[in-house]
Amino acid sequence: MSGISDTERMITLKTVEGTLFDVKSSIAKDLKTVQAFIDDSDDDVTSPIPLPNVFTRELSRILDYLNNHHRFRSGIEKADEEMARYDAEFAKSMSHEELKALILAANYLNVKDLLEFLNQTVADVIQNKSVEFVRNFFGIENDYTPEEEEKLRNENEWAFNGVEQD
Amino acid sequence: MRRPLRHRQVSSHHKKKKKHDLLDALPDDVVVSILSKLTSTASSPCDLINVLSTCKRLNRLGLNRVVLSKAGPKLFAIKAKNWSESAHRFLRNCVNAGNLHASYTLGMIRFYCLENRESGLSLMAKAAMKSHAPALYSLAVIQFNGSGGTKGDKDLRAGVALCARASLLGHIDALRELGHCLQDGYGVRQNVAEGRKLLVQANARELAFVLRAVARSSSSASLLTWRNTLSNHSSSAASVSSAVCPLLSDYGYSVAVPEVQPANWFLREWFESGRGRLGNGLRLCAHIGCGRPETRPHEFRRCSVCGKVNYCSRGCQALDWKLRHKMECSPAEIWPLEEDGGGAVVVGGGGGDGVGNDVDVRNGVV
Image (cartoon, rainbow over all chains, first blue to last red; front, side, top):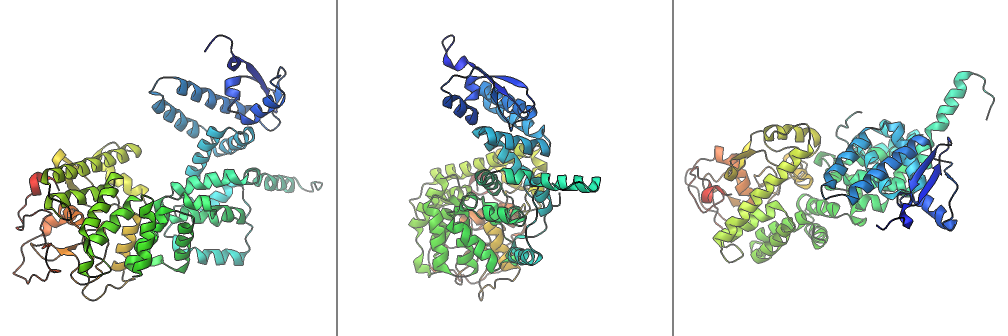
């Protein structure tokens, strides 16, 4: 990498609360929404880019994830193990509320890899849990009528043989 | 928004609004992605069914073609006693979505349990053509035995070819079967050394598989307690025997037997529970991890020592010998050899040794 190239440029992002984050443009590339904005304004981004849907807590986590992953990828071979460990820690460090908020942020910012990872994390959380748990997690209102529910239960009776309660 | 009458009412209204937040905010493709990951690592059918029961949107997205096609084999671990038209329909939908595990499972069920041979074969072939190793292996067993037809329908060469393809994909049972075929010159030119190599390789892979499983279940690193941890995780495919089996006596390890596959578990449960009736005089393969029934009298091979147990394949015979038959096998009174015509007169203990010595056949490699 030669001196001051394009990739070293710093982009400033502003969260809902007004906090400013300085991000290398190589990292910003992973935030596809931001990148699209940059492309649209013809690379002329001197003022902070406002992110109306993203909170400080989420953005800081996302940037943390991306920074670490960039570091792992550009580093030596052994990075795979470290990356897996980091990912596991990352997933564990969040409460369900934080996880949900992070998905929304990652979705808005269109961060593909992180979103894949978060989706897997959610899948792991709701695995082997009861209907009520899944409803609570996603904040779902049951829109089935009692008759429909009965019908559904009969339809799917074959699948049940003792579900683990949360 | 209404003027708050009571503080409580406001907060519950607020709470209601918040409740919709996550699912509503997520676009369909993100939800589909989550559900696909859920089905691919599902440990039983109810993982998906529970999600389907939550609300209409998740029901629709959960039955999305992409989600079904990504499902792992355990999603189809249906209990035989729960078998119904709805279960059948679910499997069919997954087959139509292109899921190979579903094709294989439904193929096995149709072939052996529902006795719809043609349809069962075609479903298994569908999976086999896309390189589904268990399907290739099951088709091999069918070829070796001429299942669903007469003994003249046996095609040993075809069986070997299918086993070879399955073992290239890493299927351990197929590898073992191939090893035995080579050792005995069954369906292929005899090559004892090569056969032995394959048997050793099969055992080595089994060990690697076990070690990986131990590493994954982070709670215990000891091989001896592995079995307990694994049986806590798997709900439908239970660990096999309570005794530790000297599967890898070559390496001085005593390791527990690997999990039974969902399709095999279904077959075994189907016949043992009486849900499916075995034809007159027909028997089940005695290996607990198999569950295959005979499709005509005297189709399977018998233990030449005691004559009390039957096996669909050498692989099953060898495994069962190690697992438990070795302990209980004892020479029987002279009984008439009513074998299925020519060729494969039963081998005891998985080798050419007809006498029930406590021999680990061919230097301990089985």
